[in-house]
Each structure stands twice: as structure tokens, then as C-alpha cells.
Length: 323
Image 1 (spheres, rainbow, N blue to C red):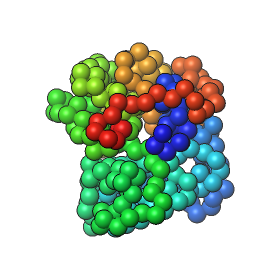
Image 2 (image 1 turned 60 degrees about the vertical axis):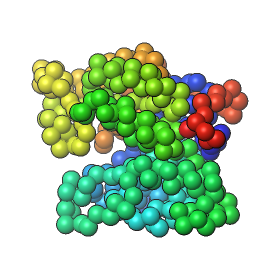
Image 3 (image 1 turned 120 degrees about the vertical axis):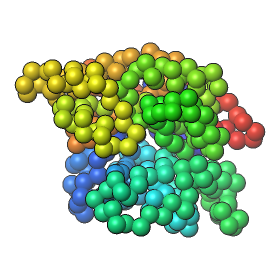
Image 4 (image 1 turned 135 degrees about the horizontal axis):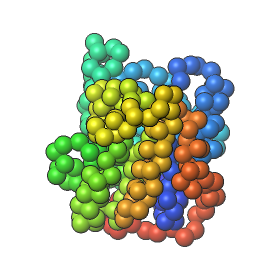
């Protein structure tokens, strides 16, 4: 066990895992944050706290993770390289671990031009690969990049992102392999709206044994409307939504597009669960978190089973360190 987190225990037990993103509110009221999180934490094995996605300022990922951990929930703290140099990154990793965070998703981060303050100066001292290797060395070797020893190394289950749907498609399994080699224990992908493309990606991942070295969770989510679908594929980096999906949304009766988007999400999850090598799903219901229990009920993933620390399955090792 790398961290002993609920997410790690669920995945190592062989159960189909469910994680979900929690849209961070713009507030300083902890009670408002708890209220906002309630429907998500009750339905999932772990909740992602977002690190200013879309390069827009919100409550920090570290603060959200600390608040939810304090309430006894398992969180996946997202950490991006856009806003921090390596000193700040290592400090935040130590701080998060000290606060009880056990899962860390290592991201490069959206470019500042995607946000509402494009004049911001980006940092990018590290990127996702070097962030992963830095966090792994802090955990496994107990030292900082400077070589200084860490008295109590962080216990972390390390994650990375993958996008099987963006071209060039043949590069995506290779990039996934590099992230696994850098230290990723689990993977969360971008939204899946193309199951055929996902099938091809997972086939290539299985050929390389990557599903045995890291747990792969597929990103899914409900579309609110045809207009939302068109906006997402034009403005959200890495999201690929086919014309067929948009046409289906447009063809829904007036006032029923949201329900149709939810139905599409349920259908995709049902197909994703049948793909060998998939270990779970990552639900992204932006400002529609109330739909998460409905979606999970529809696919038979509620209630979530109590997790335990037995019946764990080890991952294959590469060198001296498990991925």
C-alpha cells in the first residue's frame, strides 16, 4: 500500500472505483463548501479537489482537500505546475500529506490564456512528468529535489491525467507509458464521448501491460445541452465531442436536452465497464453534481461498498518500485 487511502484500497481489492470532481465554489465559508460537497462525497470513493481548472481562481485545491479530509472524506488533491515553482510544489506536497491527504493528481495545468486573467504570468518550472517523479522520490526515497532528507516522507497514491481522444492518437499510449514510468499509480482520463476510440486506446495500453502497472479510470460526464456540447468542444482543452453526439442532443425534445445528456452518460458508462483493463470511472458533472447519484444508480454503482484493507492485489513492479 502506497498511502492506505480508500481509493487505493478499493482499486487494489479489484472493485470498480468511482471518483468525481467537485466544482470549487467561490466562497470562504467552510459550511458552504461542506454543503456543496455533500452529494458528491456520499456517492463516490474519492473526490477530486480542483486546482484552478481553466486557469480561473477558486478556493485552492489544498484548502478544499484539507477541509474535506477533516470531515473524514477521501480526496484526490489536484496539483498543477502552472502557478508554482518547484519549491512551492514540494512544500504543498509536504503540507497536504501533513493534513492527511493521501491521493495526489499531478497535472501540468491549463495555460493562462484559457482563463479569465490571461495577463497572468505562468510558471511551469516543472510539468506533469517531472512533478510525478518529484512526488515519487519524496515518497519512496524520502528526499527533496535538493537532496535534503524528509524526516517523515509523505504517503501518497499518485495519479496522472491522460487524453485518449485527442490526436495524434498513436502517441497517447506512449505518453501514458511515460507517466506510468514516472510514477503514476492511477490514471484519470479526459471526458469520453467516443467509446470506439477508447477501445483502441485500451487495446494499445493492454498490449504494453499498462493496465497492470496503473489503475485506469475513464472520465465521463453528463452534457447539459447541445449548446454546452458545442461550447466544450470549442473551448475546453482536450475535449472531443463528435457531431453525432451534438446532433443527438439537438434532436432531443424541447426542455429534455439535459435528460438526454444524462442518458448518453449512462450509456457510455455501461460500455466503458465492459472494456478490459478499465478499473473505474471519473465523473465530471460541472455544476451538475446533483446528477451524480442519479447516474450511478442507473448503472448499478450505488450504494458504494464499505472498503476494507484486506484482499488487496499488488501491481507489477518495475525495478524496485511498484507503480
